[in-house]
Image (cartoon, rainbow, N blue to C red):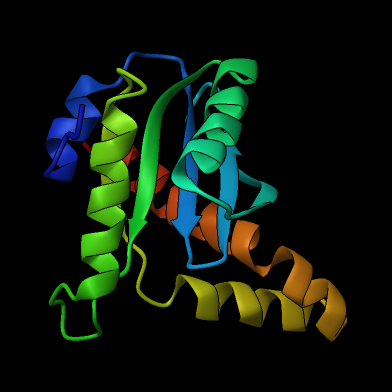
Length: 154
């Protein structure tokens, strides 16, 4: 179920359940998860994209293993707030995912999440090679943490 706007997503979530945050890219999907209290987002892994079926199978495996109750997808809006082709691709991914799961799917504005993740990794003196390996799931944790912070205010 696509629950948009975010307040609809918040209302659809079961209590005391973990969430998964996804940063969808052309080649990878960054994955982060929260604790059951929905307070802290933790980077988990980066899924190398193949085809939707394979990508979704891996995500559904994580969802089942971690008993996830909702999905937060980063929505890559343009800096002026408009939606371009990348947003359309993310919304299409969400629509396709609804045929495989009944979990509520919400969107979170991901503008500058990768920039913030890159800055944090640079401040942690992470090597260029290691940054390339982890940037996507660190960005996913920034996306998910933003959504978790908003949920606490609702």
